[in-house]
Amino acid sequence: MRINECLSMRVQDVQFDQNRIVARGKGDKDRYVPLPAKYAADLRRWLERRRLLFEEDKAKNIHEVQLPDALSRKYPGAPHEWRWRYVFPADDCSRDPRSGHVKRHHLDEQYLQRAVQQAVREAALTVHFTPHCFRHSFATHLLEAGQDIRTVQDLLGHANVKTTMIYTHVLNKGPMGVVSPVDTL
Image (cartoon, rainbow, N blue to C red):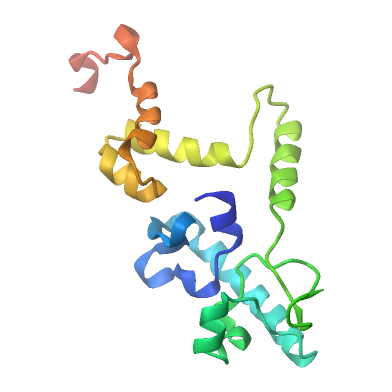
């Protein structure tokens, strides 16, 4: 997922029963990405704690969340529902300059970027690494595992397969990347 797709994810976008997440992509192009079973329980616990925050906000009458204008008009009660809350809400609330209502937005990108940079420093890595590198690693590992390029394209939300093709360079390992058939027995 792109960093903003992750941070703007809503509670209803996490589909535990289907082991997937709805990624609300660029240009209103939604897609499904796998929810790793390994992290499903952690995510459930995280959402339980976020639900408590929602209830606290509700008691203070600041439980409204920002929605696209068309949705707010079509479903006037939706901004107050749990399912529309952000999975990664900001620590603080802020006043919406348009409506004047106090709302809790999602975390700012910089929060995640700084956390990744801190982890890079603590791991003493010497490579340039950003949150977007996880997206590259995801695509690379899928291709190395034998997934076809169209599947990877769909998962990444690329409109054109040429964009996805940049990841195929890792598959081109030359003679040193060839595994002897004897070693696979």
